[in-house]
Image (cartoon, rainbow, N blue to C red; front, side, top):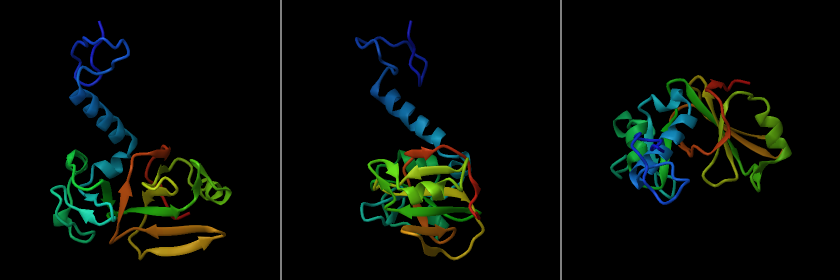
Length: 182
């Protein structure tokens, strides 16, 4: 007898490939799998927001959020359960930073410069940005003002406070939160 991968109940379905007993369990199972891909160092902190299509941060209830006001942030669980806006984001700080590489992916593959840059971060958690043509490298970083620089033709932005970054869970390189000071 087959059992649901989410709740463990017996699966009675015409589809022999079914992994879940219901739509509710399928959604819960996929959300749980996504949480497992994002490092615990992010998901355990109460620094989550939603974001609107124009990238404004939102609270889980849809009201405006602020990247500098902790009263407008929530838990990862509450942010992912919300349907406000179009996705979730993490407010940088508490030693967590992000390197944002813009327009560095072509047809799902990094440009040569992006591949060389990413190679400097083995074992770090890296995900594809919402646009599908950028990368976010999350890691440990002291709180310092953000920077923007060019590495050849590669646009590199580094932030560690006063900003939030969209989080897709679309893993480019699975990993942990490691130092970004390289």
